[in-house]
Amino acid sequence: MSDTNLTISATSVLENPWTFIPADESINKLSDLSVIHQFYFYIFIIWSVGWFVTLIWYCFRIVNSNIQIRSPILTIICSVGSELTLLYNIILTIFTNQHFPCFILMWCQLLLFQLMYIPHFLKYMRYYFSMYQMERWKSGIVADPKSSILILEWYWIAILGIVLSALSAVGIVYQYRNLNAYMSSFGCHLEMKTLIPIVVVYALFFIVGCFLCYICAIVNDPYKIRVEFITTFVSYIIILLPVIIISGKNVEDVQIYVGLLLLFVSITQIMNLIRPIHLSYVRPPQKNSRNKILDTIDDIILDPETYPLVEQIGIEHESSECVPFIREILRYRLITNQADLERQARYIFDEYIRPDSPHQNNLPHTMVKDIEARIQDPTSDLFNGPYREIMKLLKTNFLPEIKLLPEYSRILHEREMKAEQERKAQSLLLGQENQ
Image (cartoon, rainbow, N blue to C red; front, side, top):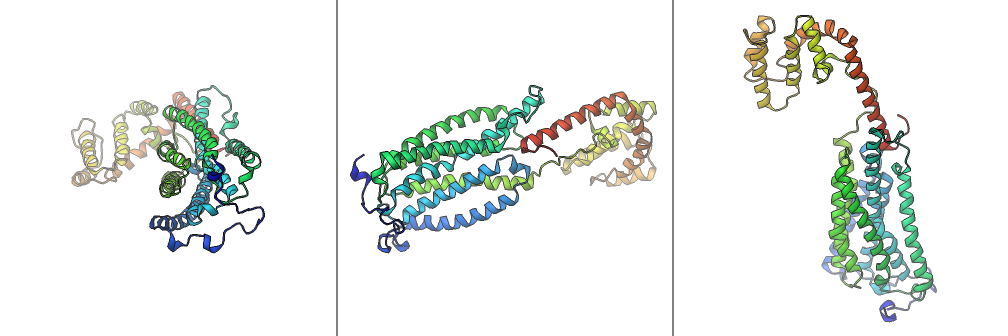
């Protein structure tokens, strides 16, 4: 690249260290900007206000597990980097390129540009490695799920620091050796110089993204992060790649360039800030407490493994017709669709309540008549009367005997071990040592 292309103005920044911002006449007035540039300027102002509010909101929700598992520090770094990159490019539309300091342009291109996407890839790598580590631990391959430092966010922050340090080293070589003559000037077109390390890093993380696409297809995804990764990676390919190509062509008209940047940042911020906030409300984390398992008769009846034990006790007490009846009532209460509710209500009445039905339960005549009168327009509490009557028997006689059965003790022990495993798994995901 010729000196003419690199240096358009010979104004020295070093000779005027505090006055390198050009005089008023060299700054584009807002009224002098094109309509599209004014549009970008106002959109950026509105966007920045919304972004700042969202970032504060994100910080207030940061303790939620849906956000913790998404590496909040890396997300915040990426969010701030994206905002600064937008700011830098908006400033380029207000200041003429001929009056923009060369050294600022170089460092913005080398560092800020990378902060738009590198932290996202690192947080996805951390998440999927955590999922993989959890699966290995559940399978008994590793004894301690916390044995690898790859599940810790600070490790990935350190990797980000290494990448930025490598880019900084390139910048130092440019500033003090290769492009030393141009660093104290305005109006340099350094895009072809800075494009080389940018393309190298882009290609590296493109390979990482392809690898993550394979991993996300085979690894469990309990926190529903797959949609965020796929959306970010697709926008990384179809939006950010044209941005890099355009940036290397010394294009004076930055309309398309800034528009694509704004589109990319908008998509990634929605996926990585707004969506986790939304999930923190609609999908609150499961409480990491040691609640009793299979403790109530309802739980025992609804569980496929322990239900045969209830049937066994029912036969011994000559009350076998009560057990399937109460299970159908419990299932009936879980129905939300009105058509299904009517269908199931009719089935229960004809099977267990109607006189001479196949599995008739002895219920008071007035209770049967009341249910029959309401069955055309049933509600979830239709069978509360029979439920209370039968539960008196089950809680008094059945429950104590069931809990004494060796098979119940075995099933309970397995469930408690599984629950403890899930508790530790959640602790692994959130990076918590003890809860």
